Image (cartoon, rainbow over all chains, first blue to last red; front, side):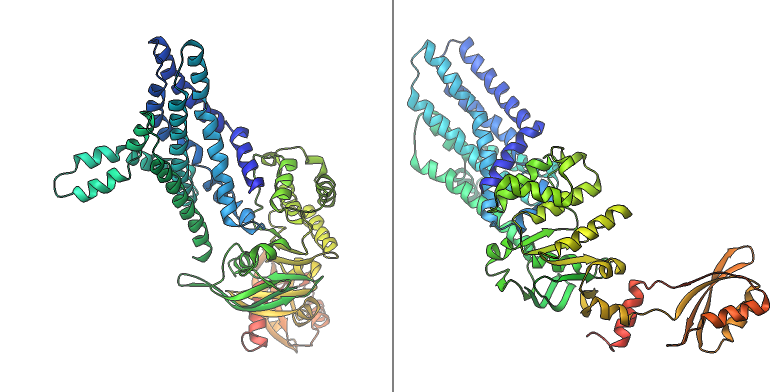
Length: 235
Length: 314
């Protein structure tokens, strides 16, 4: 797992991909931070509540090549015939993407430090928010890695992941827009909602069941990725 | 060392490998011969644990690849048909990654250096794989298979796409490696197998056609009674004259090669040498013979002959 993790992490920065990802995140989150400063508000949550939408858009960039590139270059033959199991291949790649993601969202730590020099921000709220954005990323990356393992085309992987991300974004709106008689679908949708949970974190509520939701969401999708790779050997 | 028994692989309706069994002993170089699409790569992919068999089993060193894949894979070095290279890495980074991936035990830099010298890639050590030529990429692929010094090497068409000089180099390299490793080498070129291997397994349309030593196979495949002749003379008369030779089994006009010059393929009966007789006849009529060579046996001929001689599949 270590070897694959290190290779993937390096691969992000030996191509423009990692830099583009970080650049986009830094630029947009920086804009929202500038907005806080311009309004002289001590309210980091404003950055976080907008970050949700940003990460939905940019995580597909991060995950699109994870599995599909190996399929295309046939390097999957190398990984799957090496004396390692599929789980460590998938986890190695997953954590590499997660680390790049965390480097991206950690810009908020600097924002918070800047705020702390001018005011006395609530660090507990910040930590809750930071945890939330990391958890959202962990769940989204697990979706991305699954989609990427289903195709050998990076563009399809990116668009597929983006489509699912948008669906997740719209879950609450869809749930409330459904006509009468579809309450059961509405209740399923709202119980899967990322946004409600995220907003809880942003408003300073640390709910353990929310943490468990994101962690198990990621675990399920990683499991499905492993099964998808395994299945290919048997078909 | 390698034991394959009753291996079958089905892709939906298509039977890619059909009940194939053979074994390779320690220190042998086995040639795996078959036309494109015969099931060579599928068999090799199963053997290395990349694909799973529909039924049957593969054992490396007594370890079943399905039951204990990690231990079995540890003793395999695999070079697939398309070398599995990360183009955005340098040779150095790539081999270092493979070393870590395989959790090799040898001292790292010395081991990698040694392999680079064996496959002669020391001069491109710090270059990006993206910028290497096909021949060098193939060698980096081979280097990758050698890392960790596995007992078994599985090489899928290692000389495809190389120029003649590189082919000769790679062949002699494989021969050299054969002294320390057990090797399975696939190819669709008969002469390549003959040059390198001790044993040969022939496969066609997923079925095993022959499993023999190379010497035996070449002997059975002896081809001394078929020739291609180039003759300067009127086609009909030459044809009739050739047909009149005793011991002649078959004459075919292959076509016109130059003005008044025709090419024929002739086949004599088993054990009859007709070369002198052809010359005499042509000399009598003053038709110059411009060329005489024994016909190359194609893979198709081999399959025909193998299936014919054994009355089906062995």
